[in-house]
Image 1 (cartoon, rainbow, N blue to C red):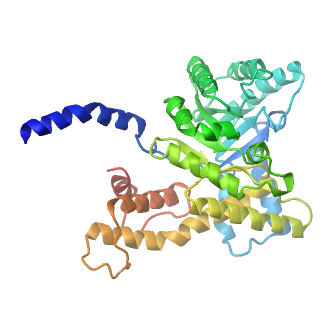
Image 2 (tube, rainbow, N blue to C red):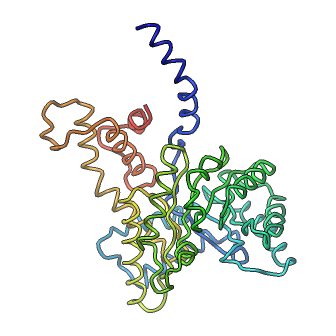
Image 3 (cartoon, helix red, strand yellow):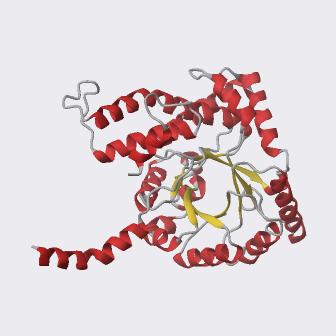
Length: 371
């Protein structure tokens, strides 16, 4: 038996090391609940504060938020209205004269340095031939000002593994980290290879709703975040990224909360439902494109976690107590589910939905989540 065991160990030693390298699990620290995209020419040192104020004005004018507790939402808007900011030089910015984009790159970098949120970065143009050199120049000019901690680069419209190799070289040259935007059919088809090629500087995968659904030939009237084709792409992203340390971000809805009160409230209902839907499917981050989307982003996120905390706490306690009869919950959980329960509770703490978990410290939850 000893000889056989030694032989098996020898056979699997390399496989063990490769698995540990490829599947390290989620990184420590909080994941932002959203990414806000702001065109580069509209970004200033007061943008984060301005978005919070605009979101509060929307609540004052068109509220209340039906079915939600507004108090923690208003507190969040006053304290940290934007968790993750992306200064956009791509679709939200468009094609400008070089002299203008040069100036906007330098000005945006200075503004970000003056008032950075917890997470930030820029979305450059794609590495396709027509915009490749412009993307590289914008990044170079932007990084003349040292970026803040938590900075990352977003690469859009990826269509090949060669582009991943290129962005890895760019990120290494500038000593920054990056994210990949998944918004082409080619990227979804190559997802496993793309994730394998991404390397240690890659932080995550962000879904691009409208480029992707348009690329499949879906009519404009039917393009949406909850279209079955979008759901399929995001499911592929989740499978490919599972346990690799890469985070997944949902995309955006193009139905903005603007206009009269009826239109704003209808957009809020849609947005809150989409946020909740993504959370229920294990996608904990999404894009916001307008200040008036912030109230429903935070309201729906807080409600999701607050609704789930009591049951998750009871199930985790029953599992840890190894109760023979699970009458307290009626559910016999396994170790993997216990890790999911503790991960859920940690996310509830990290996003600010709850101030504490009854009977558990954060350290105790982490010990279960990442034994």
